[in-house]
Length: 372
Image (tube, rainbow, N blue to C red):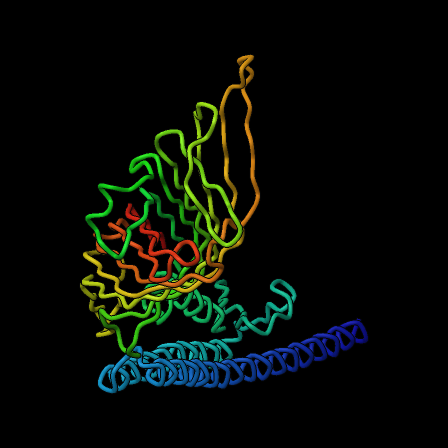
C-alpha cells in the first residue's frame, strides 16, 4: 500500500512539473508572437507611408497637384499611419497584459493546432476565450489599389492627350477663282454632291496644366462626290478634262475621288475645368462650345466616274471609268469647325485646284462629330 501511495505521489509530481514546463513554454511562445506582431505592425505601417509619399511626390512632379496640396496629403498620411500604429500596438499590449495575468492564474493555453501556423494572425486562448487578430496590411493595400484604379478611371480627362473618333458628312462642290458666289453657277448639283469623312484625331493641351487651348491632329479618309447636271459627264482629252454632254440620257453622272488627309487644328475648348476636393484641377473637354482653326495636307488614293443610263432597247447600263481625270494628286487647304460638345459645323476648302491647269477648287460644308 505504501509503495502504491509513493508511486502515485511521484506520478502526480511528475505530471505537475510537466504541466508547468508546458505552460511556461506556451507563455514564452505567445509573448514572442505578440512581440513579432508589434514589429510587423510598425514595419508595415511605415512601408505603407513610404509608398504613399512616393506616389504623392510623383503626382507633384507630373503637375497633378500643387506643393501645398502635396504637403497636406503627406501630413494626413503620416497622421493616419501613426494612429494605426498606436491603435494596433495598444491592442497587442493589452493582450500581453491579459496573457501575464492569466499565466499567473494558470489559465493560458495555446491554440496553434486550431488556427494553424499562419503567421499573419495572433491566435491564442485566455481562459475560455479565443483571440484571433489579423494585423496584415493587405487590406490597406487593397483599398489603396482600388482607390488608385478609381482615380485613374475617373480622371482620364486629366491626361494631357486624348483620342477622338471623327465622322463628318455634308455637301460637296467647287468654287471658281476663289469666289463663293460662283456656287450659283456651278455645273455640279449642290444637294446631291456629298462628302463623307472618317478619321481618328489626338487632342493635346499646349500647357502642362489644365487649360482651354489644344493642338488637334490626326488622320482621316474622305469620299468626295461631284454630280453633274444637264446630262453631262467628265471627258479626259490629254492633259485637259472637259465637261461635255453625253449622247444618252444619264440617270447618274458622278465623279468620286477618295483621299487621305492629315488634318491639324488649333482648338479653343470653352469647357470649364473642375476642382476636386483635394485641390486638383480636373481638365474637362468637349463639354461646351468649341472652335477649331487649321488646315490639312493629303493625297488622292483614287478617282472613278460612274455613269448610268438606258440604251435604245431600254437595258439599264452602269459604266465605271477608272482614271485620275487630270486631278492633282497632292492636295492641301484650310478647314474650320465650330460647335457645342461633340457636334460641330464643319467647312473645308482646298487651296490647290481640283484639276490641273484650272481655277476650280473643292469646298465641303457639313456636320462633324468628335466622339471621345
